[in-house]
Amino acid sequence: MTLGAIGVVYGDIGTSPLYAMKEVFTHGHLPVNAENILGILSLVFWTLTVIVSLKYVSLILRADNNGEGGLVAMLALASQAVKDRPVLRSYLLVLGIFGTAVFFGDGVITPAISVLSAVEGLKVAAPALGEYVVPTTLIVLTLLFAMQKHGTGSVGKLFGPVMVAWFAVLALLGLSHLVDNPTVLVALSPLYALHFILNQPGVAFVALGAIVLCVTGAEALYADMGHFGKRPIRLAWFGLAMPALVLNYFGQGAMLLAHPENVTNPFFEMAPHWALYPLVVLATCATVIASQALISAAFSVTKQVIQLGYLPRLRVAHTSVREAGQIYVPFVNWTLYGCIVIAVVSFGSSSALASAYGIAVTVDMLITTVMTFFVIRYAWHYPWALCMAATGTFFVVDLLFFGANVAKVLDGGWFPLLIGAVMFTLMMTWKQGRQLLSDRLRDESIELRTFLDSVFLSPPLRVPGTAVFLSAEQGITPNALLHNLKHNRVLHETNVFVTVRHHEVPWIGFDRRVEVEPLGRDCWLVVLHFGFKNDPDVPEALKLLRNRGVHMDDMETSYLLSRETVVPSSIKTGMSSWREKVFAGMHRNAAAAADFLNLPANRVVELGTKIPF
Image 1 (cartoon, helix red, strand yellow):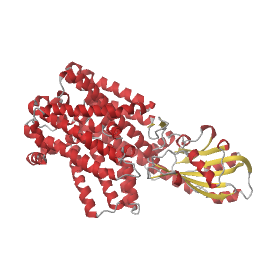
Image 2: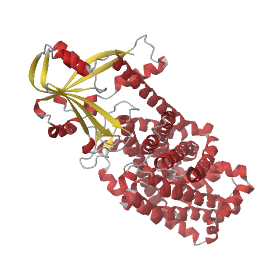
Image 3: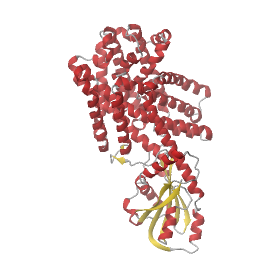
Image 4: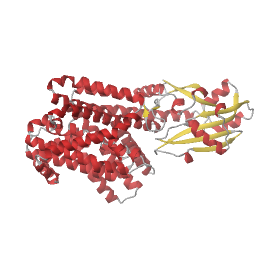
């Protein structure tokens, strides 16, 4: 498990030495002298210590939601903790969804800057190859996204060993220069960071915008907790990842003290010339792994957000018969790819992309810290003063990094923010539109018990078999039933009215999957419960009814759904007209409910209905 954590969890943060130190001196406009190098090294070390070791590894990994982590899991924990405070809960939900939206911006920047920075090693090996950097990067990224539909199982087996080799190379490269100049190790003292900040506060603040690049990927520690568990992630960090990173950063510092002219690309300048081409290949493999981990996370987060009701249904393909978490979402895959191509071509270099990188990372760090406060205060019931002290310190640190990156918004930081803003608008539009649509259907609906009582006063012909009617609202008459009676004038012998509920917990076990209420005359009201990481498999869940007195033969069961079509109308909905059009478009292009709920295609009957909106 620790080997797997090294391969998946630390891919992003493990490739940050490719560009972090370079960007500190490039964008910080710092003279490459001993005082600045030692100050920056001290800041890098204590940033890794405070943000990764203390905040994420020591504190936030404790905030697991039934073993799961990540911003969506944290959002669910925080919202449950304050469920008796509806106004506060609504604000936290909006904040969490905004953080999730910004994550997609990070998902665009990470593969672009990682692969670009690795391929840029070609310019160090042979400056004439500089013009091939962008085309080579695009080829690598195209191959990476094209292979997603085949799944990551076979490639995933290589992740751990390759990243172990990568961290070993990081350590060896750093050691080779530390041996020549071990005096840089004095920068392990926080006094050098404090001295640098106090002597040059303005320059230090600007430099923080680049120093934050050394902790990009820290969110993955928490997001991947459900895959590996806390202990392997902690062992991998303290046992290999952090020592290798510190050795490499300090090795870069030792080299720059002796050769300040190497600041244009200190990572690759550390290597002997004969090793440059193998190092470029290994770096490219490592950045592909870092990108793969983030792409897989994008698929997982999308699925979770869909099941929380903030995005329309999308086609989700399972790429493994054994691992439920290995999924492929074609729309997300190719949308990410298109945005990444735009980023690579538009920015053209890792230095230009570095300006766009930090803002998304620091926004998510801030939001995670805020959510953590509400979890430890209202869910764990720790004293208010202790909660403020624990999260307040991290909040101030995160705020400093965020403020330093705000200055880079015009230089490229707008790009991930734009992606995040678009995603946030789409998610909130979908959530509000679905709520308005649900209210409309409820207002115009007929109560199910009342309707069945009236139907059985003069019952229609009963035909053999079972009809499963899917309804978004519990206890109301499905439109599919109304249309079936109107056009076919028959009722099945057994009728099951099913409502699917998604909850703000990652998993709901089979012991809590089904609620059944008899309606009489072989009619049943059923509620199925799923967590945001469960696969909503309705036929599999309905098999649990056999122990509840409901007898269903799979081959004699039909699933009847209402296919709702939203049509424009003059009715005031409460949303602006352009958002109404956006919602109608999203509704029209949503994947079929039958596919999303894993219904057998040869036993599904869809009956259409138009809804003015």
